[in-house]
Amino acid sequence: MPGKRDLDPGASPLHFLGAEVRQAREAAGMTLAELGAGVPCDASTVSKIEAGLLYPTERFLTVCTQAFPDLGWLARFYRDSRTWGDGPFPRWFEDWLNIERKATSLRIWQPIIIPGLLQTADYARALFLAGQADTSDDALDALVAARLGRQGIFDRPDPPNLWVVLDELVLHRLIGTPKTTYDQLVQVADMSMRSYICVQVVPASTGAHAGLGGAFIIASMDGRSDVMHAEGVEGTTIERTALVRKAAIAFDLVRSDALARNASRDLILKVAEERWNT
Image 1 (tube, rainbow, N blue to C red):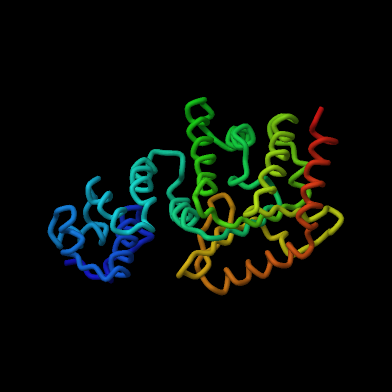
Image 2 (cartoon, rainbow, N blue to C red; image 1 turned 135 degrees about the vertical axis):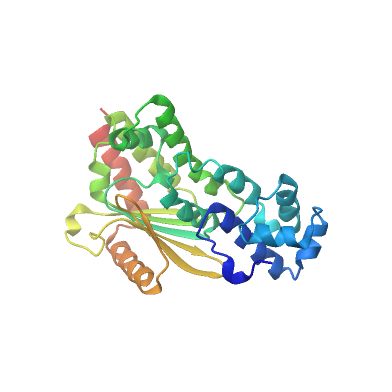
């Protein structure tokens, strides 16, 4: 049977699924044979699925979600992941999506645009239209649907706590039409009213500050060290403790320069009305 050393959760969605099943099974004190008995299948089949060497059946996924309540998302994740090779998410983003789905909290610093987890459909579409080679309606619709689908993490019974810090220049950048930008800022203000979402703005008068190196997201999860996603031409998911700690310090510094939550919301709505409500 494949050994633990053969398992690489970051190699593919199949390997990630196997790692999650193995971790849940071992945490429950269940043997390979005991899990297989519920499918039914033999222990070697379970072992191969956990090692990312064999595709799971729908019955296998159902048994896993019944046996391990914390893996209730597993079947949907697996079905969605089967389309990623030809779908809207690039492969370099797959590992971050897995982390984002499991995060208990997310800290986002964004000096350029509204983050994807807060975007409206029209705002996202305008961004994709500016940066995609394929600008057909079908291609853009798929990209927008995928981005908005990420916001489903807020529909969970236990949504992650989200802290977003924006540079004020984000509010003044026209994306799409004035109405698109207006509607986007209003949505951000509305979402910031949720108890688990805090949005703060660093005023332009601050000048130089610790966040000018670029946008990033830090995810925190139960039982795992924090992970960072640094944005760029292609985003990079980083687990190196020293770099994640450095980003966390930068986040705390820019947040210390930001307006308070209510004052930030007032500023967002003020810019929306005065600059974009034409």
